[in-house]
Image (cartoon, rainbow, N blue to C red; front, side, top):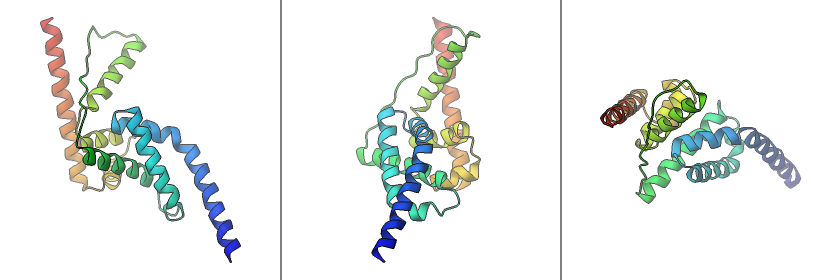
Length: 176
């Protein structure tokens, strides 16, 4: 009986390793967009994967293991942020004129994501899940473990904050 349990554990470990290897890049990108920091993303994803490995037998039987682990990443980041009670709010600088150059498009996109890093954690997570992961509101609500109207409110408030930030930057550019 011990041999059978050991073999079952080995199969689950191999299954998890294959799953994690296939998704690590996507999870790290997601983690970066949620946390706003490469280091914090790596820590959140690593912690989530450790917990997922320990519980893989149960997680692998869920309807969507990817969603479950993304939720673990978000929850881990929120918990770490709450325990540290410190927060960085980088200031985005967007200068110059808008050009058709692809490098400018990438720079603008990068500036928007930097502005997103200044949003409250739940708002940033909702925006990332909505516009980067292209999830609908019920899926986001499940990942963040909040009601769907709360998700809509987070996205609405985040977009309003981003509009205000862009408008203030645009006004600052016109004064120069």
